[in-house]
Length: 294
Image (cartoon, rainbow, N blue to C red; front, side, top):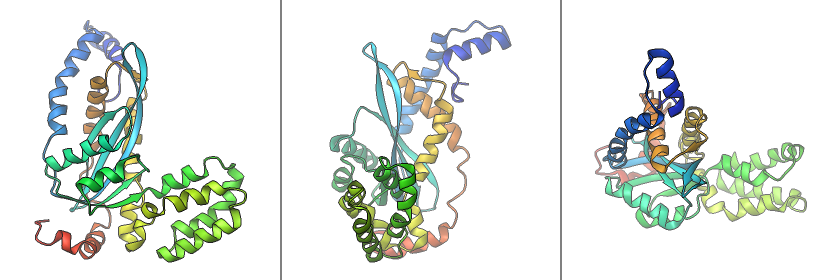
């Protein structure tokens, strides 16, 4: 019941109404606290040696701390292994993003056996590129294109966005980086006077926005967006929507862990079209994959 998103008071009422059992909310909390050692063990479990891609995204919750309600970010690391299967590598409750914070996560993955990450897709997370470069210097970093479109057009009226999307599509849907850059310059020439922030945002982040252009279509679709992580986050929100405030960080983490276990038990197959993607990765990353038992 807790894993399905019911609050401790809901569970108390349910047990009383259905079974005639008197079980307090605090007792429910103590019972579910038994999961915390298992959560810690899960957070430190061994991982695969190489991941084709890791997707990083955040989901926000409210937690009681020091007598007040504070906002907590839970950072989700979702990995796609070399067999095309996805897995939640970790969930990390943090107050804010920083290079030091991300470095601790990267070091944690390294200590758990991850020797290489071919590509990482993120939503412009602050401090992430520096941290991953310190631990996995060869990892290709791709900033999520979907997030970039949302972020760069959020202050543009809806009608304005509709008119400008064809110009942006010529950028992110180009067949090669040169064509994308030409499309971005044409977009600037046409719209910069009215919406200068859009070009500035794309141009300023181009180094991490353009990574996927070096790959063929199948591999591009793997890394160009954090949708895999966002989809998982949406499922978490469905489970946790009834709990507006968690009493502690640990209570938040155990709730997310139980929900995660319920969600991921359905992840039994590999990504569609993985054979083609794997073949491309073997070519692009031949030197890094040679000699590994994958």
